Length: 206
Length: 391
Image (tube, rainbow over all chains, first blue to last red; front, side, top):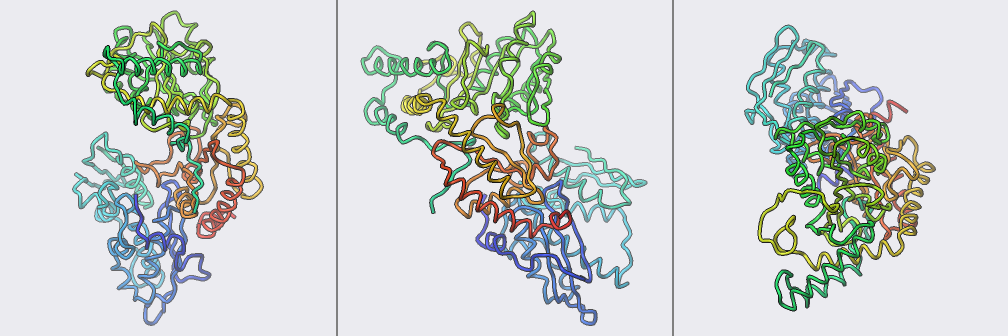
């Protein structure tokens, strides 16, 4: 596996790293169990809604740290509406690419940035607390990357069915038993869905 | 920048003397055995001498030695050979949940083909007790397998006690041992240990890659699992790598000429790694057994609050090669199965660093590595949300 020089540079000397005192919003995504966790802190200008300061912390591998660093570069100075549109593909491209098996790091970094912005919007009464529905599940599945290809499992048509019934999320996957990454994909789906208090149980069939 | 290599569990630097010993057979005696020509005869007698020399190191006989293209091939010839020759007598296999993938991928294959497997569970040090083996034996058990030294944490299994358990059973249970991490590090006596088959790899002891050996106790029936032209060895047909074998045997002689001294030196280096970490770096835990219950070349330590791939990458950029059990550095993005089986949590597994030394490493190198490691750990902890929360 080869990292680009840019990944190495951001890994060795990350930008905007560390804890922020008195942030306007903060979000943490990922979990130590899965081996990667990112925290993003924001300071937002109340009038202009421009991100004036941003910091991140990372528990994770080289590409986790590098993607955390690059999203702070991409978001700083932007209005929150514009910052919300930064995609994980753009973040990966800004690092001159990531190995497919590491694309989930970019998804996690962008996801954490968006969650921090959403927390800001909720705190300021700009948006209501989002409702949880089947669409939320599908949006979360779009953040699960199949490591062999570096694309999400919805785009790759690996999800045959996604349903929500009385707090039970059921996902049917099209993934062979002998697939090297099957257990990882299943773990990732659980991590993405179990963080919602509305989800009481996750059933994954394959 | 001179690289400091501490990943000798994966492969070792070939000894220059071993490379030199190969030249006789690459430059001049490149012939094949198996015919009546004098050239053939010369290779056949060289092979016999090599087998004899190897046999002495494990107290066996030359006719019990088969050279192979590596440890994995040796494991496959033995495991498949025993099971296919004896499937009529039973279809139950026993091994442990911390064995080397050569064993575990073979059991997965046989599970799909009508065999049942009992995976003995290890304790918190990666040790699998003989009592567990005793309790798992059934009338239809045909094979028990073990990795003598664990490839992740170096814990040595009680292979002699296993042998006594197997002997006490009133039917024959074949006993296969993977010695790839143990050969050349701890004494292995075939008369004492009672293995029916045992695999060895050359490149783990400073020999060339792509060469190994399989010990098969005289009288052990093995089905032929590889088919092709029979030049020297019915179990392993096709051509032979005579130059590779010559390099292997030279590397073996270099180890066994100073066996105790060599092993003591490896132990001194790994003890020193641990002592330095204890002194210099807070928040760590040792993975595996200590003292003479551990292979002398292995030290495995988890550093809390940070992730192993980041540690190994930063050390790599400082010219240091070590290994990690982190999911991020693995092929399937899963936490290391040995550490998880030992009851370590995900963070301990992701933050584990495996240092494996060779006789080419020095105390000065270890000093340099720990100095760099200390600063890498401090840097990564300063970026980690877990460290700040827990401090």
